[in-house]
Length: 192
Image 1 (cartoon, one colour):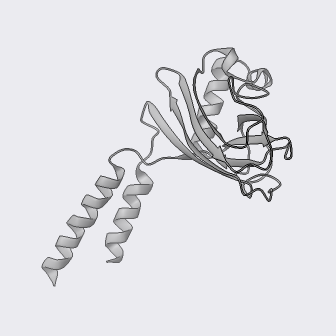
Image 2 (cartoon, rainbow, N blue to C red):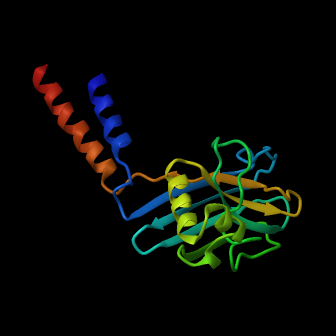
C-alpha cells in the first residue's frame, strides 16, 4: 500500500506545467496570508492563467467580507521568501484596470497582453530591464511560487487579503494518478 501511495504522489508531483503553453495558477486569499497578517475575515479565490505562446495573462478572482471598501488589487512579484515579506507590484498600479473601488465584495476578470508596457507597473519594467524581461521574470517567479495577488482596503491600506499563486494540477493529472492507483491496487489483490 505504501508503494501505491508513493507512486500516486510522484505522479502528482511530477506533473509540471513547464512544458505547457498555458499554465493555470489558483489563488486563495485571506487576512492571515498578508504580511503582516490582518485579522480580516474576508476571503477570496481565483485563477491566474499565463499563456506563454500568446503572451496573455488572465486574472479572475472574487472576494467577500472585507472590513472596508477596496482601494486596489494587483499582483506582486517577486518575493524571495514565499508567504513572508512584501514584493513590488508587477501588474498595473495602483490597481488592475477596471477594478471596482469602494466595495467589500466583488469579482474581477481581465486579460493582459504581457508584451505591452501598459500591462505592467512601470517600476517593474524598469527593474526588469524591459517589457520582455518583465514578462520572463514574472513567468519564472510564478512558476517558483514567488508571486501573490492581494486586495487593499481603506482600513488595511497595505493589503487586507492576499494569496500566493499555486500551480493547478494539469488536466489529466488526477486521472493519471487514479489510473496508477487502480493498476497498483489490482496488482496487490492478485498477490493476496
